[in-house]
Image (tube, rainbow, N blue to C red; front, side, top):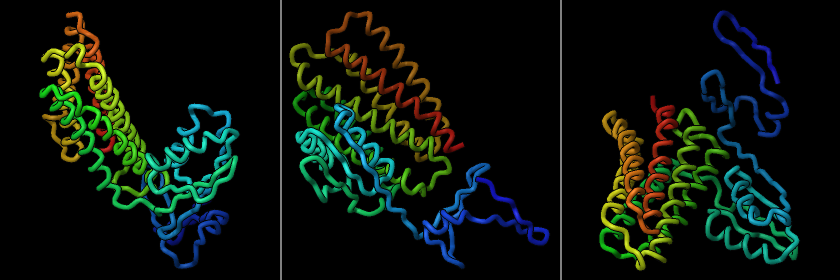
Length: 304
């Protein structure tokens, strides 16, 4: 769609709004609109309008991707979702997922082969507050993991793994807010979305290693040097959290050096014929270190 620019006098330039968009959003004469500059783009949106989005999906043939598809539509910003299915047992999976992961969604209507899910919580408030809480939760998860390793308290690791569910809820709310509203105190939403997605993925890594060691480590405990490698990874995660909220050249350089040191240490430790638990710690450490470092590029796009 193209619009011709109208010149008024020697300064003001005007452009008309698409009529269909204005009607859909109930734009009235004299109403104020929000305008945000984004490089060569200008984003215009109504400050007081909220488009109610509905969607239908048939999950009968999606198998293991059914719940992921519902979560994706939640993150996309859908307000009401009609889900159709051919097997009644899928309804139980939907109910469990809604109660555990999808904040603000409730099943308002259901039958033998369908259910209707609606957002009953309204729009997300306090984006920055939730983002910081999400960072702190992940840092806490890493710290608790290291503390359990040092104490040899592998029974506590199951509780640490449980924090991943909260991490999922927070990151889903944040991604939904970006897709639905797009109004946050950051100029570039793409890099921010990537960082939030990475926080969710790193939480998964900690869940996996916690559950593995909880179930298996008593048979072959990892030696101290392998736990120290995991501690360096947790320190790298904390450094990124701190530099995200306060630019620090020294910590930024340290992130790269830490990543390289963790990779080199991992290669060296692999030569010592580690047992299964130690191998998992190496895998966890190098994976998390790389995921943390991968957030640095998007962070620089947001910051510099």
